[in-house]
Length: 279
Figure (tube, rainbow, N blue to C red):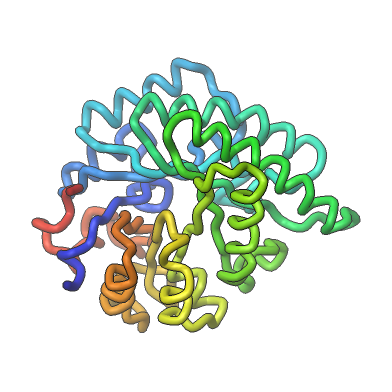
């Protein structure tokens, strides 16, 4: 058990960001990782030129890295936005325009997990209207994910850092997962269990794992406080990942932490080099 027993991937939207996007897969590979994940890389557009999609695919292929997770278009992230699918008007339209683009790109690189960030509450918009729109868009996303053999992920964020985001507890995200699965009958909507966000919300992490491991499609980690590498805060991450495995979770663990004031490649000293490659 312990870290060497886990299946890790590196989030290239928070690590190796000192490099241009197309250089990050090779940098992750040089650090020993062969699995990576990404937020939607084109924050300005849900529909980038095909040449840019092809260039990213080539960078992943050339580095020998497998993309195992990809966000749908989520607005300005990093930035003020936390998704687009529940935001009425232009942002919802942009999310819909992105659905097939993201699904087709995932299919082209063999990525089987697509994360749909819910979006912030909007001043003056009825929360019930936003939730109805969200369900409509999540159903479309779930069907597109299913078409390419992927799961749809719904993520809990944390209230201190995302005060306008409505899914700030594990049960809130699970409720949405269940609604999507009920609406589609596909069963491919899953919970993205992020131990950092849940800890920032003050949740009982061991209890969340026991309750929801069976509905979890992906896990992400960072230590708390600070959102740094494991060992920089006080979360018992190694123990919690063992609990997840004991509860039946056999999927990947995304490293979604900030490297601090050092190069990303130097932030992995907590993980033996032999445990970094995908398996």
